[in-house]
Length: 394
Image (cartoon, rainbow, N blue to C red; front, side):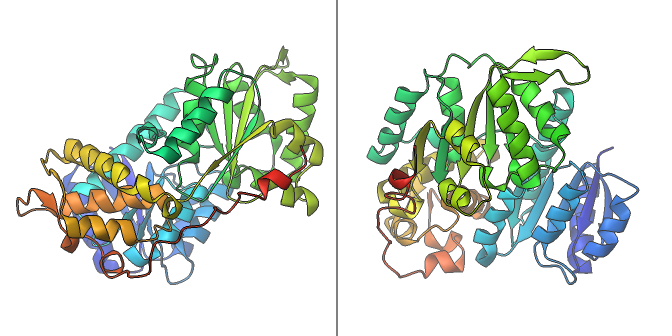
């Protein structure tokens, strides 16, 4: 029986979640503070952790960092209010598996828990113990708008080469999906694509060495690359220079044949100037740049992605919703999407779940309040990184 740890200072919420998950066949443990949860985790490791974002003694992201720092490598799910979605998306960068927004819906909770169990078991059967290589949502690459066509043209250009790459973009904008597409269009497509979240990677070189060995012949995707510790940076630089690495679990030295794709939501060269990132390592990884613009700067992408996420949600929950009313379309186009594609997917999924009246289209009442009543015009600019990347030393 799979064990789930629920952490929430709201005892009623804990009880409701427990009753539901127990009926689904899970063993559930409740803790009402982050401190009690950490004490529990010193002796017992559950299969999944579900934590509220706002706890009395610590917020959920701080707890997540401590859990990952203690090498407790289980899927960590955040529960949050709609107004905290941007913060919750940031939690993904710190190693969270997913987030669920209130009001909590049974079907959604059960779906996310099943996905988390599948991800954990999949990684247990393969190779990774330090970080999960969670499934990449390839559907992010299916849009046919001009902005994504430009990115796909860049991918088509760079994928067949062996250049290392840095992908820039805001949280949730689709950087991992771009990295996955590069790998799948490369000559390495039959070899592993290993995702490592640098924000949760221990300072010891043992963990990164295991990931590199697992990715040998394929692609190593370093998410939040500026968060690599200096110790790990030096190790990575050394093996890239020597093109040799020790085989995991043995003393055998083997040849290294690997492509590195890094992602970042800040300019890596700025970290070099600040003395936080090794310049030689930067130049070895910075063979090519791709910038994934934020969703608020890709107005034409909003509805194609909304339609696609609607199709996915229909399939998942066996519903037959046909599209969006004109008012709903207007709401989606005029929101600024701080959580980018991740937030859009979450809100469309939630709207499908809430549509219990048999409506053939999504209406604005199915959206959260801050989406429905957002009136500021869509912000259009040149992006966070454009112009800055060109000034980096190459």
